[in-house]
Length: 327
Image (cartoon, rainbow, N blue to C red; front, side, top):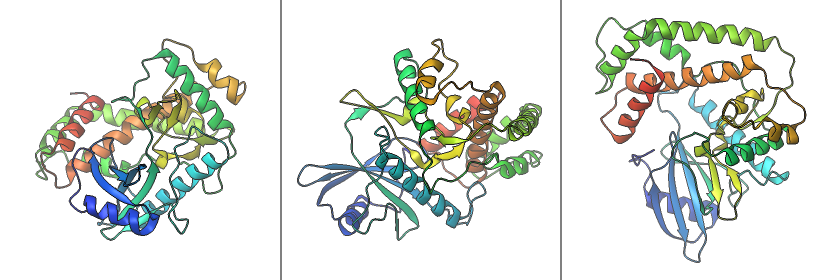
């Protein structure tokens, strides 16, 4: 997120790190990176640094169909699952650091969930594309190891629901009058109006794929959920480390494979070397690609149906929406 939240100051983050993690913090700066969550980099007075993430619990009681309590439980189970994976030998997992009482998540007074990670020197890409064939092959092998791992005890099960589908359907039924919730509300309405038949067809196509995959008896595995290039940190020791584990779920393996297969280089052998002689299902790969586009559309429609301003985050969200909804 590019826009720093007004509810959480750098001083508040420093205070939380001192009070609950026992860290001696010298400086905290906001890091305008990623999407969805807000981030800070904290430096200790004696050298170490930490990467701090905060997610807002929706004060209205729901966000994309989840209550605030459900959001809290989802975050807590996801970070615990990541910690268990790291402790079990999955060194490619960047796991959160427990506080002095063993908690991995702390709720700050304003209704935000705060998680602390070690700060690792490295770099990531600005988008999710796997353009480097060698890197695509390497991440395929990592996913093979992940999918062969024993599921953590706290791991939640993925379901086929498209987050925010009800929000999207409500919006599609309300295209006959202007929207006035902010500067991108009316452009969103016009965009959806022009693509109404396309969107209805995509929803119907997704439902057809769901029926096919639900009938399958293929085993579900531990999946990251978003193993795109921007969620991989290339550390200075030459390794790849997967970050952003809030989407970790027990799910069909194609949930991850949809992000890495299909490039000019066949990386399936690298995956199979770790996961076994597995052949991904074409219909399942298509299901997750369609799911992703519908979930992204619903997220941006939800955003622009609510009061919003012309911020940098809003502008980037609008550009993203236009990539998923044809003009």
